[in-house]
Image 1 (tube, rainbow, N blue to C red):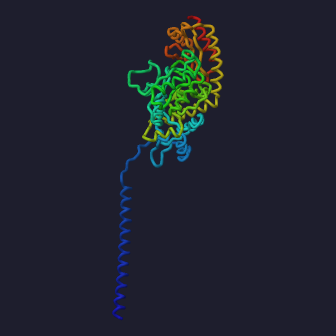
Image 2 (image 1 turned 45 degrees about the vertical axis):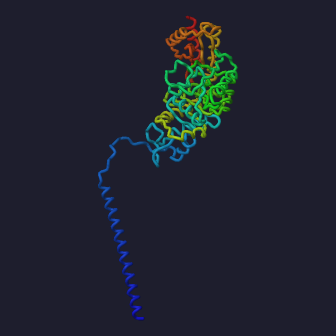
Image 3 (image 1 turned 45 degrees about the horizontal axis):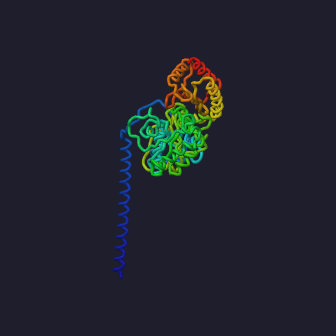
Length: 441
């Protein structure tokens, strides 16, 4: 018994010594790690790290929206293909890309969405109308899985590969591959075969679907008022009938508002006068009052197609251009420019129509708001284009201080698209100068 107790005591003492030794080793390891960490920190502190060059600029404290607020707007109003860099995004960096978190692009996208009908709430920004139309056509093809696009003769949509194909005038086409586009009759009330009967022109679109495609199309792209084509407004009833036919064929309807958008016609958008709501709207020119800016606005469902791959535009949506775009929207509202375009445009159109009664050379006066066309013809019955006279009057008006453009397939249409702040006094001066020079022909 004594031997057992003694042996038990020896065992217990051994366990205590082993535990003490283990604790001692653990403490020693902790001390080793501590000193090693301290040594590393001292080493880092003594390292000669790269230093930023000195500069004498101190940015003002940031007082804008929070990161969370900006991200929330981006998710709601910008294309879902847009991404940003870093776990903690830089907010205020002066860089032209939207990869960095700047509130200007989100603020403008939100304001732009407020001007759109229906569920057109998601924006993707570009630098021009050509880029916007290229993107819109690609989105329509991706969304529908079809390649066939329908465009209108005499139209102009841009000068890149896809948009050149959609453009319906030989003057703007180079001899390069332009595929997947079907051009339909231009619903031109002045020169078209059906006059102002929009539904008869729309039947040509249905014929194209039936006889030139599989019966399914990617989409239809059109201007409510053709700008380069000579201020030609689609015949009444055309767009509603065409939109119905195209959607029945599974296609999307794209409204090219590059020239007619932003209050120029007296409405915010040219398509509004036709009682339709497109699936995609493209815009540029007036969007930034001279800044390089364009946009595609569509529904969240259609915008999702751009998440299938990476789609990015380096300068599209940069802070400077989008700040200008937001300023434009504010000025349109503050100065009632929609109402001004409607009122002054109607007044000027009446005065120009009076000139038509005075001069046989004026074949047609047309348009809406501050987007008016005056077509010159040497023979009213034959509608023979008066090209030389158009150039002459254009040049003489310039010498008297009036700058207007020209367009149309034959180059015989005055394109009158003045700033939206144009007044009745300005309109009187323009018409008086045109009157004077036509009297000298």
